[in-house]
Length: 175
Ligand SMILES: [Zn+2]
Image (cartoon, rainbow, N blue to C red; front, side):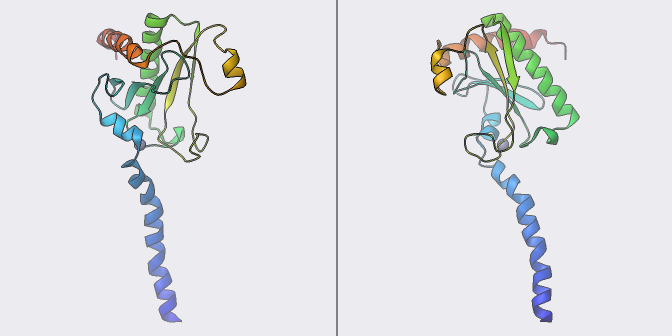
């Protein structure tokens, strides 16, 4: 009986360590973490590396010019972000809006994030923010009846347009 109790006590810290380490282990298989390590370029669709985040063109856009902002650190929830990360991500959001206004002159933007298990895989994933240009009437019949979107761009062409605009905006950014 005494031996059983001792064994239980020694097992508990191992289980706790496993639970806390699981997230870190997952980050090594995270596609967003891999993306953050890639260089700016058409092959990666990465447009900008900030101090604490990366901006990329979405490869599965909801609309023309759909950009994604990935925190550099593997965090799952918005509440895990530190102040310096919040500031850098908000600066990156402003940069995205500025560039997209220059290139596409949209009527407005949808800006946001799905967190927790609301993604298609039903698994918590690396936090990601979306900046999506919107035009009056851009919700068409197909979107109303299906989840697919009719897109008027080729992703690579959009990347090349946005890449030069990001270069110009980064060079005149004040932060
Ligand atoms: Zn990650």
